[in-house]
Length: 125
Image (tube, rainbow, N blue to C red; front, side):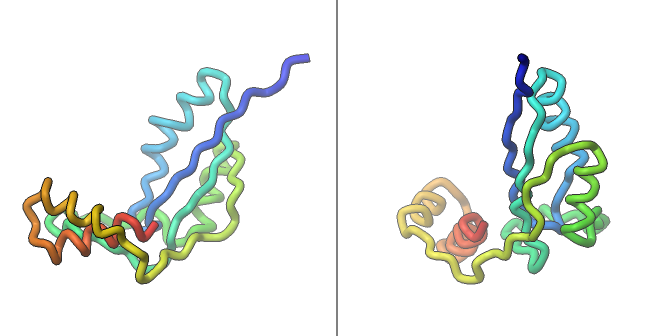
């Protein structure tokens, strides 16, 4: 008897920046096309949106999903198995490794304070 082959995909981020159409087209459907039916965990925060690169925000951008439940329902409407039913809530003050901040500072053009903010946002998820 042939068993169904499965894959597992974890999608992380912030609800206000979630682009499921892109993930469906570039990750989930290609997995299906090779016979790997994906199970999906949405580790998505639906509260505050944190950003470090303010210059990259498009003023005309409007979030596609107003609720976590709607994003889950869209995936289920495509026939995907979503294994998470509740949004994730980011830690407001995560522990940031000093070496991580130093490495960002060595490689980037921001000042140390901006690198600390960036590192905090990166590890918050």
